[in-house]
Image 1 (cartoon, rainbow, N blue to C red):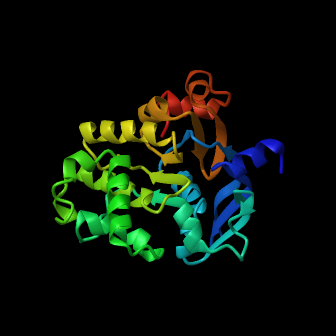
Image 2 (cartoon, rainbow, N blue to C red):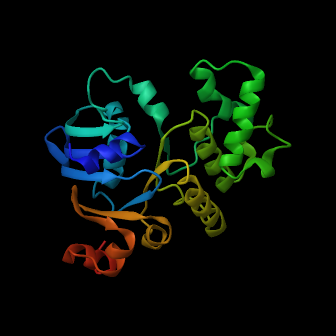
Amino acid sequence: MSNEAARTGELGGISVRDLNLYYGESQALKNVNMDIYPNEITAFIGPSGCGKSTFLKTLNRMNDLVDGVKITGEVCIGGQNIYDPRVDVTLLRKAVGMVFQKPNPFPMSIYDNIAYGPRCHGIKGRRQLDAIVEESLRGAALWEEVKDRVKKSAMGLSGGQQQRLCIARALAVQPDILLMDEPTSALDPISTMKIEELMSSLKERYTVVIVTHNMQQASRISDRTAFFLLGEMVEYGETEQIFSMPRDKKTEEYITGRFG
């Protein structure tokens, strides 16, 4: 592993080497190599079906849940290949949290949504759970809006609030890395702006990786951008460079709206 890769792997970064993913006979990811840097927002863009969400899910082994998936190559976090058979997947997903496209709060109180993960990892003390719930809601910029109704059902929150609750739920188990799969695609513009502001503040403490179909969003909030097409990572670099001077013609055609 290069020094650069080692640096990304030790500090909340991710080093991906020669990653291929197959659904049965069909190859969905082709030889992906990249370093994702700590305390940055990295965006994956590309047309539907290009492999960006599939790749995101390889970073915390969510694809393990799909029948017939075969993965070759390495994804190293903290210097360890997460596909090593000795890796505890539960602990991996504690370190690498996931927020999905559609808000998916549990049908229970706001408090219990956030306390769920810490309880699963053995934290039972009321005072400690209270502190985690408040800290996580503050971290997701939701505390002031819900502090008087944390014992009420999470299902009564608006869509944007539910998505921030899901972010708070991911933060509650103290991850190092936060993966977000099109986290604003189901939200209105005001809620989208709040989530974008939140992501920009979260990168101070976490490594954030986002899949987005919204190129304006990628250009607004990400530090680096990767463009995927037909399972291949065509280009990866600093966001400003990708959007102003893409090196690959396919990237330029996608960004200027000529296809996709």
